[in-house]
Image 1 (cartoon, one colour):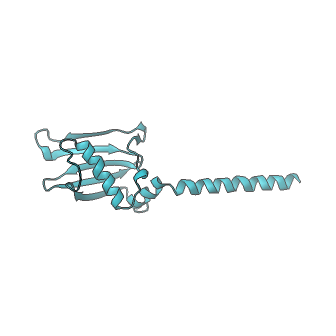
Image 2 (cartoon, rainbow, N blue to C red; image 1 turned 45 degrees about the vertical axis):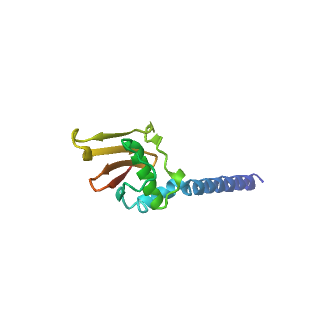
Image 3 (cartoon, rainbow, N blue to C red; image 1 turned 180 degrees about the vertical axis):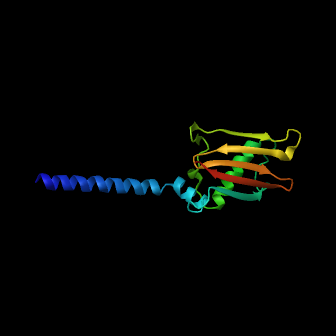
Length: 138
């Protein structure tokens, strides 16, 4: 009798662990990570899109525009809206900012944005295109 209880308990524990692992693997975050890294084949990925494809004029809100562009790129590759969390970085709260690499040259502006998936660089060229580089966390 004790042996059958032990076996039943073991089966219950293994079943629970299997169900939990399926739930974790099937998360929108994990699905997006698979899409963006091409099933873990790439550590870094580059995307390019038209920067003017927005209903809103971001003016000098470069960081807001960068968030919009990243969300749009992720949606285009099939990620759901709840798969990325820009408030969560590797050490807790994420960091994001935009700076000009060369102070007097406007086209040298680059935004660095952390998320739960990895970190992004967004830059704009002089032809109204935005370039997004995704890097996974190590």
